[in-house]
Amino acid sequence: MLEFDWRGWMQRIAALWRSSLQVRTVAITVLLSSVVVAVIAGYMSLSVGANLFDASRDQLTRTSSNATLAGQQVFDAADEDLGLEDLDDMMRDVAGVIESVASSTGGTSYAILRTPGQDGPRVPADVQTQGLSSESLISQELRDVVAESTEQRTYWQSVALEQSEDGAVHPGLIVGSTLDIRGTQYELYLVYDIQDTQDTLVVVQQTLGLGGFALLALIGIVTFVVVRLVVGPVKLAAETSQRLAAGELEVRIPVEGNDVIATLARSFNGMATSMQQQITRLAALSQVQQRFVSDVSHELRTPLTTIRLAGDVLYDQRESFPPATARTAELLHTQVERFELLLADLLEMSRYDAGAVDMETEPTNLVRLVEDAIESLTSLAASKGSELRLVAPGGYFEADVDPRRIRRILQNLLSNAIDHGDGLPIVVWVDSDQDAVAIAVRDYGVGMSQGALERVFDRFWRADPSRQRTTGGTGLGLAIALEDAALHGGWLEVWSDGDNGSCFRLTIPRARGSELRSSPLELPPNDDVPSLEGPHA
Image (cartoon, rainbow, N blue to C red; front, side):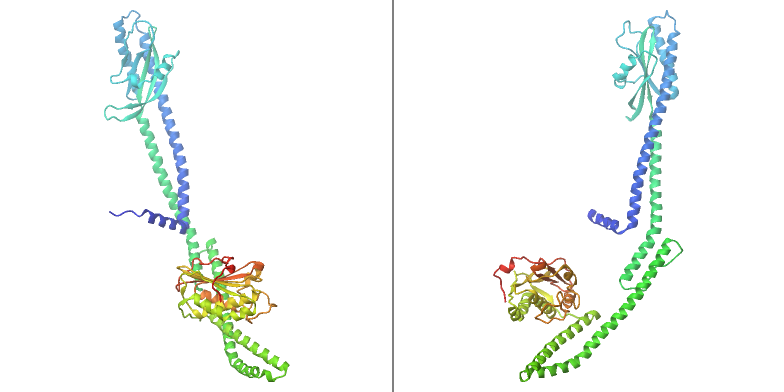
């Protein structure tokens, strides 16, 4: 036997509720309308039921009063010389008269009972309809009220009548009054079945219920149609905007009529046309700029190679030159090297801008990669008085990466840390989990301001242009590092705390194409690490 998937259905309903404005609007409208209809229908049902009962009660009490009056008149007109046996016969005659008057409002039962506690013989005897159980049906409370009555009044009480035929229970009404038979008080009780009034109320309630459901269905249909007329164009506009965002700049919203929706469509189409023109113009300008940078960079390679060769010759012979000429040869050599680095970085950025960058990935142990990067910069760090330390707790260090690009990121981060570390230790953390690998480079030098943090990855931007740099950077290193991280599907993030130094954290997925959700390292990692005796270069 197949089991019903309640959880799956609930999830689908929740997804439909979140995604469909039309469903939410119709459902909320029908729900609120249901509350209003239920309140109105309930009030009407109670009001109609009360009115029907009051009308039936008033009619039955009037009939009971007439029956009581007719019976009393019979007794009053009787001869004073009647014997006791004649009184019993008259009691039965009076019961017939009363039953005849009361039956004009439908079938009824009666009971004429002597009021307890009176002196004299019990004549005439009590009479009642056959099958009527006066002891269980007529409450003592009603009998007490009727017995204490000093005037011709009627008293009533609601009861439940059990039908002997089918055992069904009908609503009923007992009306009590008094009769004076030769100075002796008797109580007259007339029992009425008011099932017809209940049936009328049920019909009214069913009519109200069916009318309420029909009204709710009509409200739902009307709301659906109205919302569809409004939501349809909005949904079309949302789909068109998504296609525009995906690069389909030629799509437009169909315009029909002159209403507000048509005005919105025309405005949207005008905005889309303006955006298309701007994007096309900017794309053309970007292509021209990319081509210019690429062409200039390529064209500069030939004269730069010639200058480099000439500069190397002069640099090799600088000891034979006068001091001023030797210093000029050294400056020329240094600047040519910097020019070559700048040219290489410009070419790399132009490739990123043109989307012409490829990765050559392979399984790589990042701890070994970090150790190589640290070893290549150990002498430079020593010249600045900084100690490079590696902290690698162990774990899933191998990842599918492009080693050349990761090495370039590390060298850039370590060079920046050496330049800004003020001779304090520089700590490199490597940690990983089943999904990602993270590398953090932390220095304890001057740090950066909030404004610098917002621009640290901008091209050609430096936090302090007047600060002496040991590595002779071009201002493109962090921008290229950010692009390399993004190419791996990873993150390159920065933290800084005033004079407490800075920390850069690189997080990349272990498998190419995987989506990152978190980093194995905090940013920054634990501050106690520099004081630990960990492996270091």
